[in-house]
Length: 132
Image 1 (cartoon, one colour):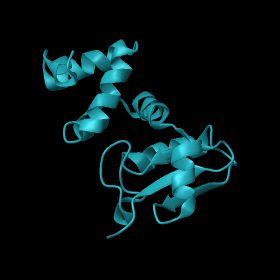
Image 2 (image 1 turned 120 degrees about the vertical axis):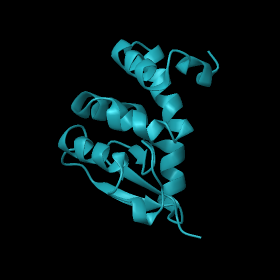
Image 3 (image 1 turned 30 degrees about the horizontal axis):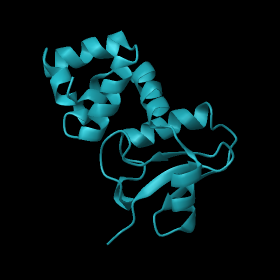
Image 4 (image 1 turned 60 degrees about the vertical axis):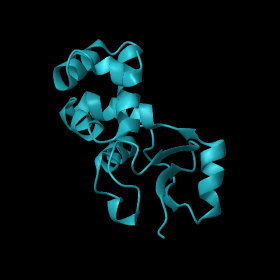
């Protein structure tokens, strides 16, 4: 059984799971999905100049980061959304319930454009998948 991985910013005490924006979480997915796209944007912005490390679940830092660091999945999704638009995120969310919920939360919290994009992609009843 192989590890699940995260990107961890040791200076900001933040992390992003490799699969936070859809796709797999194993070693073969590092650098190959929307999480990697978000990592690139984070490294150009809020994580610029920081010590950032890929951490597998067999490393003691993994559990420490999950418990003590801030998960920046929402911020990462917002970066990708602002830079690339909703299409790839919504395509990934179609097959990833966690990402679908994350994007739905963002829409409910005031991102009207994302809400419209979700309605266009998933139909008028897109909120029902979230239990709303």
